[in-house]
Structures are given as C-alpha cells and as structure tokens.
Image (tube, rainbow, N blue to C red; front, side):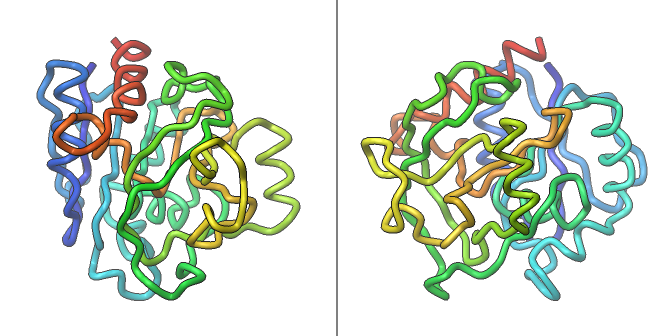
Length: 229
C-alpha cells in the first residue's frame, strides 16, 4: 500500500501519521507539498493535522484552495481513499469533500487530552478492524473541532450509516460531559456517500505505540493496510 501525505504551511502532525502508516504497512509514505499540481499514484491520500495557513479566515479554508486539492478531489471522486485528520477534517469539509463545518469548541478553549470514541460502523476501509459499538481511546488536540451541520444533513448522515465515530464515555454512553467540543450529535468523524473519504477530529495516529499511552489506533491503520494491500 502506497500512502501520500499532503503538507501545507503549518502542518505539524505529518510525522505522526507517517510513523503510524509505516508501522502498519512497512512502506515509506510519500510527502507531497501543497503547491504541487500533480499527485503520484497512491492507494491512500492523507491530510494530516496542524494549523494550515495559521488557521486564518476559517480553519482549512485557505488550504482547501491549494493547487494539490484539485487532484485530491479528482482522486476522491474516482474512489481513492482520502483521510482527513483534525485540520485535515477541516480542510476536506471546506473543500466540499464532506458536508458540514468545524466551529470553535463550545468551551472556547483549545482541547488537548485523551477522549473515548464509540465506533459507529465497521463498514469502511478505515473501521473494518473494529466492531460497531466498540469504544477506543485516542487523543484530541484542537480549538475548532465542534462539528456542525443542518438537521437534514445530520439525519442523512445517520440514516446512511455515515457517522464513523462519536464522542462517548468510557462505557460507551453518549453524554454532554464526553462531548466537550459541543459537536452536533456527538459526531467525531464522518464518511462521504461512497465511504472512501473519512474526516475525524481525534488523532488515531497518536494511539499506535505503547509509548504514546494507547494502542487503540492500531486497528485503524491495520484496517487500511489490509484493505489496500
């Protein structure tokens, strides 16, 4: 499996996702600068976390118009898996690859801590190693992770089984205390209609090594390596 990681000015989690992918696949991911207009052949495209363009305008709004994003959108339309993590989630929503928007956390503060996520579907290349209802623990690090969409869009996402992860308690309950950023319906990650584009705010790449405090993200990258081998 050949992965390609897109880099923007202000990206800062590219090494984390690089290491997680290399652990899972044994293959060195490519690194692609955002101003490139051509994307090499890749089985997976990753837009990592960070603060692209300093989060000016709206988080991800400027990055969504970088030259490489035209190619990313074309590849996504053709079926190539595209993964947006944290700032990457913000970018893929701003680029129109996923519905909704990421707003400022309801606390108006930056959140940097471990959270529990309930896996809502195992029907994707990203979640096939998990069971629906399974609870995993991974870190978050964001100021604008409050997912918002209109009620019709939320109903469609839920009705089509496109909610991938929700914030929850350690025992899998959905409550306000576990949904610290205030995301609509506790949504932490969503899929597109074709189920090849995933955006999520938490960082599974930072839960793939015992030294990081959790290995609950290993199944995420193992699933990709298995599905795209």
